Length: 429
Image (tube, rainbow, N blue to C red; front, side, top):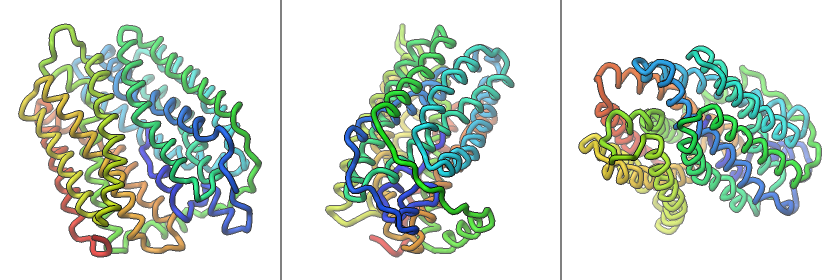
């Protein structure tokens, strides 16, 4: 999974070359005059199914699968598999987006990626070595990124600017809903991983069939290809901006701290936390994930509204990062089940508010109004890059320290640094 800002980009006045509306504006093609009927519910369905698979596999089934293969080395092996698959996903996402751009269609890629997810999950459930698990999960990431790249481009393709907020809300709600459903389904099949993988794949396939059946699209002209040299120059140019550079650093630090812990959530519940009798680690994931999802959804809305009302972005971004840091200290100091419940609630509050308000902050300090989407694409690396590093960092921390307390402390320290990184920003309050 590549947590990206393509959803937030869909609200911006400019769009990246792979996303459609900027091409409509740049090349004189008409922007959609109204939101197609039924599109928003289908966006919710499609994104919910996508996150259901990502969370169900990444947070529950994959850690259990690796533990079955080699329990003694599960921490290091999960770090390797998670890191390699994250690299693969990050690299493949723009390739998948370019493929759908080149054809001028999204629906065929959504349908193809969704149906292919069934085969990839069936393969993942049938392998019994870590090497084959890594290969199968990379294949799963490939087909899911075909699905993801196409469906995240639907909003800028088909939704007018006046309705982007509602569309982005439909897309954004997919994460808490999908996270909850993924954790529940993953824990339901903790004793039958093969069936669990297959069910998650079938859910994405069903969502893809529903989406493409219930929504129509018009073929769009292929965009102008952007040379790699030009993309690299754009990246370096954006980071020369003082405020943008600090916003990039702050987000990268917080996301790294968050995913260091998230990737090892099941092992933490298994080896670090004293769970109540009868509660398995997989079932515990199914309990804490909805708590975090609900508080994340609430803080995303409330944080965005309050930051608008008080016209204070830095304050809310820094405060939410500190809340995330504080949440990570709770299970470090008290490895108990009640502490994990408190952690889940606080971490959801902090991370949700941070991402919502930080998106607004960044939109106000972009280096170039004419290249807004390009610069937001650069910022996406502050979200995607740490997800690549997190499994490697976490496995090293746990292996060297011999436990998960240090992992929580490292995560908290990164979140504090993320809060401090907001302070040098001068262009916004």
